[in-house]
Amino acid sequence: MDKIQITGGRQLKGEVFISGAKNAALPLIASSILVDGVCTFENVPRLMDISSIRLLLEDLGASCKFEDHTFVVDGSGIDKLEAEYELVRKMRASILVLGPLVARFGKAKVSMPGGCAIGARPVNMHLSGLEALGATITIAAGYIEATAENGLIGNEVYFDIPTVTGTENLMMAAALAKGQTKLRNAAREPEIVCLADALNLMGAKISGAGTPVITIEGVNRLQGATCRVIPDRIETGTFMVAAAATRGDVIVRDCVPDHLGGVISKLKATGAMVKTFEDRIHIKGSETIKNIDIKTLPYPGFPTDMQAQFMALVTIAQGNSMIHESIFENRFIHANELLRMGADIKISGGNIANVRGVSHLQGAPVMASDLRASASLVIAGLIAQGTTVISRVYHMDRGYETIEKKFEALGADIKRISS
Ligand code: EPZ
Image (cartoon, rainbow, N blue to C red; front, side):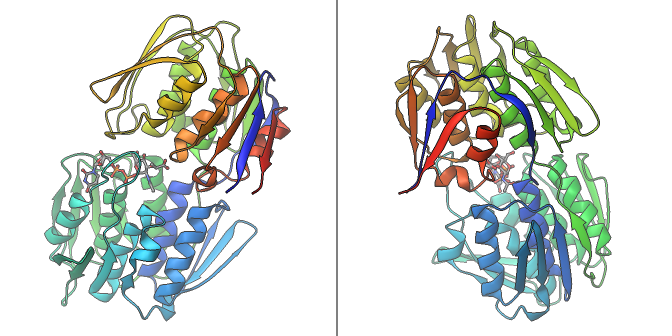
């Protein structure tokens, strides 16, 4: 397994170009199942998760081509309606094939995704939403079986809590249902809007994406289209936090500042200078990093996917910072590794972290546990005195395209040690 070695102390300087968003590309690629034809998706990042969903689609019978960040799917050959455990266990987001399969074919069998390091990750809202649209759901031997022999019927669906992939699954399913569906308390992430825009290009009739109520008028069929993946707001935020933490001066290019309201506000509160332009953000770190309090919330609140990166930043802030992780039940695993680097963090009640700023971190061998935790450890390695070696970087390769090359281009002393 590869490792990443970082020698800290360098200020990041220069420009970094942001890739397409993993969490927009995955639902877009899944939506191609709805189409008896060819869909083309541009600006798709080259990531492990994209390879995983490609394997899954090809196993279902679709044919895929992925060259130079353009992903082409022909869904006309799909002749298998079962997403097997061996493929789903590699990537939980495979649950996103459930809605499209049952919408187009009236039947689907998908392995329960199971949990991951950050939490149990239930899919009960996906399933109750499909039942509201008339699907019959049974769970046996670790598989979800959904059937709707006469097709799905539009209905009202209310989410107890805004679920990103739940909203995406139901939006895709409702696109081919008979009649109108309203999704209430829907997730509002930019990735939801990106998917709605793509589905509308395919002939769907969706309005309200990005608001808590999404209305979908079902249509009989969708046709192939060419759609573009939005820039990755979490990759953008990750580089912004790294620039602030190293007191650097970085311009983040090909991004959407409007998608980063919470992140920009919190970075400014730490004392960083942040200037936004149409498709770029200029960020300069301040010598003194001020302490801040964070609570993760559904979009447009502060994103849970940026919590670990900010925790690394505030380990060297002046004073105490409090981080409240309200979305996932176990998303502080990175704290244990930061403690090994000399951070002062106390976890109370499972979802509150009190971080007392220290003068500096020390480089150490650490282990990545999940995608965003690995980004947190990279940032910690960049600011630590000495050398940090991060193991299990396959977690990072799932969601960040050539991240060590991008940091190296900004002046970091970072390299991949291939096993
Ligand atoms: C998406 O996960 C993202 N993944 C996650 O990014 C992100 O952290 C998360 O949204 C929150 O923003 C993709 O888009 C592929 P949720 P998702 O359903 O959809 C509970 C990353 O690092 N819930 O919005 O699985 C759930 O347990 C990943 O890129 C239910 O209880 O998250 C959580 O507490 C990590 N029942 C909350 O809702 C359900 O049926 C929000 O989860 C569904 C969710």
